[in-house]
Image 1: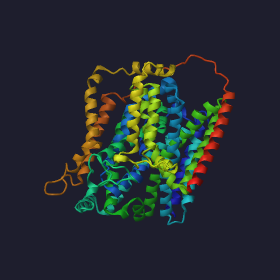
Image 2: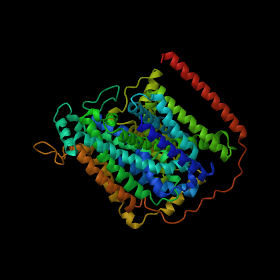
Image 3: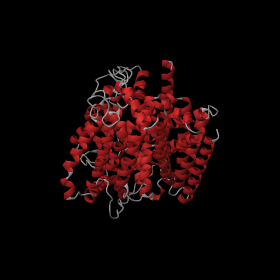
Image 4: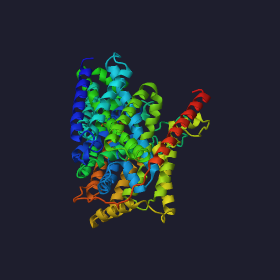
Length: 638
């Protein structure tokens, strides 16, 4: 009760002061959304890494290892998995944003694909990250506050204070505050990861004692399954329907988890940072050395150590460890966790607020809204999002968790429109839109939220969560990619989009024409990348079960074989990220100015009557939907 309030007060003062400085630099509203596209490359590199890792790796990753062991081996490769989408997309998306003078994913989707459905979908994804995905992590932090204060502070009070700090600096400072403060928050989050791991190992008596405890645990037949991947796939009906024979940590489960993690870097909040940066110079360095290198090492070593410590002794989990160490140090570690979670939450809130107001409400319902009023309404929307998240944390935590589980797999479905914009020019608008629709259905039908909604309507599916131990991200992408390719193949003669899309295709094809050296390395790049996916996070993971086991018992590397396999995979994965970024020039710095695209002038038609009609239809739809939900709840007694 002395150290924690003191640290939180200092943290709040710093964030609000920084927000005020950012607001003055913004002119209060002129550069609120994108900081005038002036974020330095090093700031973006840190923010992208910190927002992608945030606090979830300690709150979820370490907990998964502590509860179920090393079977879900993809956790150790999170740094590599998160860096690959940045290597594939960020440089090309930045070039498109500069050429078309756009600052958000929703604007890119509208300009390139001319699809309001994709704009609405990206807005839904941004809102899920802001309210649910961030809300679950904020709720976990609120529970830690209750624990650290010995229940002197209640859960609602803790949630209110943490949400107020978050609301304050996002609403006041906008993207400039989120960016510059995010760089500091990333450092704090990284220090907290190292601090938690060091404390956990010291509590057990050192790294040797940690592995000795793991070896003793592995000798117990009841716990031996926690140190192996339970096959390539198990053909089970999924959670809630049919339990897995051993445990759900199969090779395909790890591969599907990697797909879900890739949704973070293709989400609207990550692309918002890319498009707010003044140069792509640090994309390669950020994805290679910060994300895959520094944070990849923290995950493969520090998070694994912390999770392994709680696997040996469950009392040394996150909450238990905070009660075992010095109060001042525990409070400092909590601030590091808070910084990591609020970095991601703040960026998600800003992106969601902009998407809802600037990219949906203004174009559809109020096109005459001035820039100053747009910022004002966005601030109100951000406040409502924070309020909704805080109330759900306290009142409906189960619903919040179910919605949070949708964020990553739904964000991964954005890969097909991103691939069409940046690499696969033969993807057509009908193909991408239809494919994303099928991908959404694939996600919802294999997630608890969608299954629960259908069950409430009296429709019982024959499968449960993650059939065949594959998460919804993989099921959605299978449907998404197949339908996108099939429909695109049959609609090649149809228009691909408007003039902006044609301009974007010609621009990227002309400016990113690969050199002969790069073309000669294409087969090598494909081969090593697919080989790494196969052995590091795919079916080849089963080789890691026994690769470093001694014939007479024990482990050749002094650690579980799967952990050693994960470390080797991280090192090789770092090499692949470097090779793709620099040698294949996928994320290498771009030299030269990008001229702005000047569309032909057109007269803007008067949309006021249509906008009033849309608003009327919106109000009626919301009222009818609310009535239907109430009727269903009353009918089924929930």
